[in-house]
Image 1: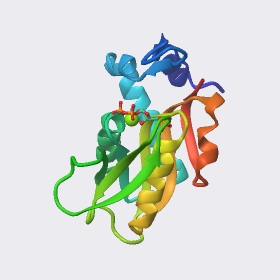
Image 2: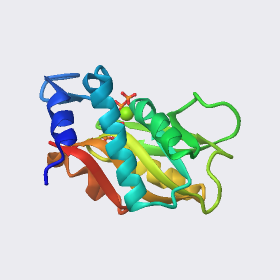
Image 3: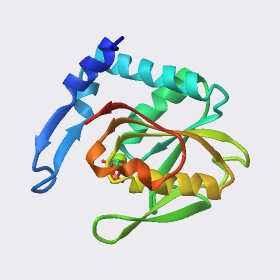
Image 4: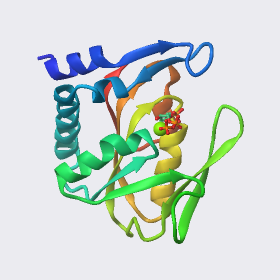
Amino acid sequence: MADERIEEITKKIATYPDFPKPGISFKDIFSVLLEPRVFRNLMAVLEERVRRVCPGVQAVVGLESRGFLIGTPLALALDIPFVPIRKKGKLPGKVKQVSYTLEYGTDVFEAQESSIKKGQKVVILDDLLATGGSMKAACDLVTAMGGEVLLCLVCIELLDLKGCEKFSHPFDAVVKF
Ligand code: PRP
Ligand code: MG
């Protein structure tokens, strides 16, 4: 049976052609956040999936910045820690780094050294999967720190880009375009 909540979330995701540059069709999670009922339904769907697929999860890892918007309420709902992965130079203290490839050049993700424990079971959360470069880098960083990625979860997957082929961990998306 179709989930009416997901149908409504899908309709609420606004599309902006040619943003941020020509040829890119931008899917905007913020249009969902404008409506508390739809946002709450999105969070409920995410929570249900995590509870079903990985009931033993011990932390939610969110990717800067849009992954923070949904990662923090999910961590609270599950009553487990929220761990931020940020772009280079923004986290204090000792950090672990991973480089990843962008369309032009590379970028660096960082996590605070003590934020992920050895053997800790995590779900990695982001708003959107496009090329999969960000999610792959996050998987690599969590794994290098000794964490175990139980699930990579996003609100929106852009199917044409085949981003989920970049990494081998279990993956799920609420809405697919
Ligand atoms: C966007 C989006 C994902 C990532 C997906 O983030 O929020 O994190 O790109 O792209 P990929 O699958 O090709 O790696 P962005 O880096 O634009 O930053 P933001 O979240 O701070 O807006
Ligand atoms: Mg992002």
